[in-house]
Length: 320
Image (cartoon, rainbow, N blue to C red; front, side, top):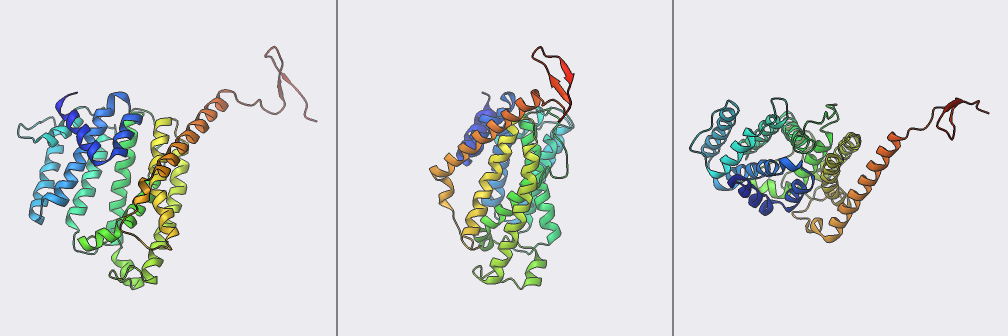
């Protein structure tokens, strides 16, 4: 294991046990380290922007450096003054499987998400801006999943491809609302605030809870369509990654609904043993259903009006 791989393993394990185990269990064997590099690099970038840098000018300069670094690396130029975390990105890009692999889209869209967050603190954002924000994230997540799992497989590029992640991001913003608001991040479009008279200081109000309910319903519609797409995937590991990703956020969706659309600052029960057991059960169910579907496609039923003899010959028969 080289230096950047070891660093990526450490950062990912510390930052998210679920992401670490997902990479180890589901990513292509020869892409596990790169999958961890991708998570660890953006975990580091996000922490620098959110925690280490206190002034807007610093955040702008830092993100500009990262964007320039990405462009230079894809142009074949590797600077000698990279910090260890940037070296992870350099190795990741060096290993890119091709111009249409999806990795560059993953990197650029994730960087757009971080740049948006870095520049919106303390201001209201429009519905158009939040839609773009969600689209960047949804595209990045699906590009990443389908790059690191079943790389090279011709995954369908249908319009419903990213809808499950759109639903997950709606839930993510709801889950973090009570932490985000005091920090200056408003995940409610300015148009909704003005139209519905939403008071950001009164999250217990009927108006606020009505808006939360609307977001829950939107997320459920996205999950329903997005999971249909995931269920069609031929790569079992990708199907499992997508299903577990949805299940994680649907858990929060159900909790918010049970709470009468009142948001909480924390949901510690999401890390309970029961939740992990349910995730394992979901994985078993999906695997069995996937295998059964493969077997069924391997042994298609004979068409009406056709019979197969014991010798394997096909003969016509008349329906009664």
